[in-house]
Image (cartoon, rainbow, N blue to C red; front, side):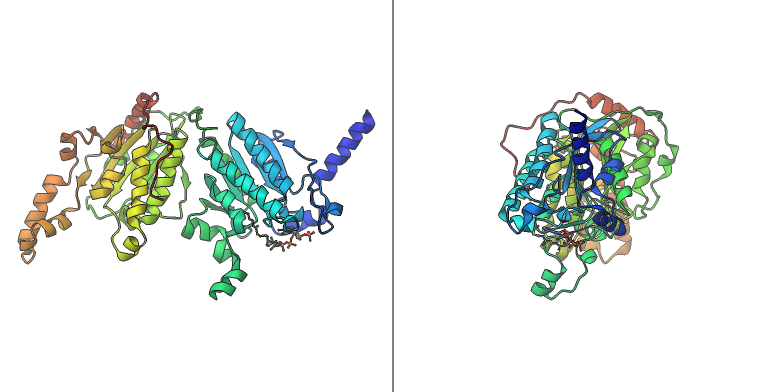
Length: 510
Ligand code: HXC
């Protein structure tokens, strides 16, 4: 018996050593943790339960039978984050560069299947040279099995990808189909083809980091939601995000105790909006003052900053926040902002997370770049996402709500449950100046007349009361009471029941 246990221990120790001490040292020298070290940081202490530690590859070509390593380059299992169950896989770069074999893929699929069965998030720690070259199509088959599961899990359990090393070629498409991607600065990259191929095909000279590093993807492309400084920061941030998320699409949002009073009055909000309608203010201030303890987990803060999206809590329960940011491009909706917010709204709706929308939007961004880029289709994404969402939707207009952008930003007409406006709300087809230049075109040469007409238009429309008189705004509220109103609204809406007509799936403008 003791000999058997000793044998088991010996095998475990061998598996834990992965590709050996030399390769572990090389991993550390690059500033990266090993797969097992990463899981230690990610999960609650002592909670990790590994499976498939002894799985080996089945490749018989290129001398591979002599080079089996138990675990086959990926550590898989389950554990907890602040006591809540998650399934995890961590690719082990010390074993064949974390390359994906048929068996390696099978291990990942097994934990995805288990997560789906019990309804728990899947967190993937990616650090891989891609398809295991010695295995050829067997590896591609394995990858595709993972892709298929990513799609079936989408909207059922949250999926989070941390890119902590190479992720190139078709391999990028598994993370791309998960809900959130975090990347580590300077040690991770994602691209479909690397700098060498790019140079051959297009003559462009570009570094790995420029082409697909964490900064590129969290600013330019929006492929990544956050760029973190190092492995530890990425893993701890993943823990924070998981704390906000439901375990699956049926459990509802997590709840945790808070000492922040639900009816906290924020007098400073009464004076936040500047007298001059063209002067910006920081919408983050509104968001933070409404949420519990001022805590806000922002998604894609560095991409399309003209719209803010992220998670917070009210009375300890998770909410999704979407807010126009007047500090950036006056809070205008453009292609990137529309895509960013649409995806976020759909995530919230899929996982029953109520949506709070703060509106200060002058309209859609004009220009050939936007029109040729397809702002019509991309703007429609956000409209579509809000319109199909059946979760509780509370909207607060703080200042401008102009034109099509008024309609899009969770308006009453898109089944907004509670639509509030501050007294500073301006709900109109467009700003007064633009409106007057169109409807009083004959007076354009007469500045006095134009000023008079502009004042007339402002008096008529630069307020929330016309919309309120039609029932499009449920109530004009004191800014200082915004948190109280939202908390009460969310309580009322907790049992909201609304279903869309049966369909196989919709046809959102992609
Ligand atoms: C098998 C691999 C491997 C791979 C790396 N290794 N990639 N083994 N299949 N794809 C092994 C190396 O042989 C080496 O083994 C160890 O991993 C570490 O690799 P190094 O090259 O020493 O490390 P480094 O210098 O850090 O470079 C990492 C790398 C490079 C950039 C990932 O290894 C590389 O370019 N690998 C090939 C990448 C690739 O072309 N993959 C296929 C892409 S196509 P030893 O024994 O020396 O430690 C693809 C399609 C997926 O992935 C499609 C899905 C549908």
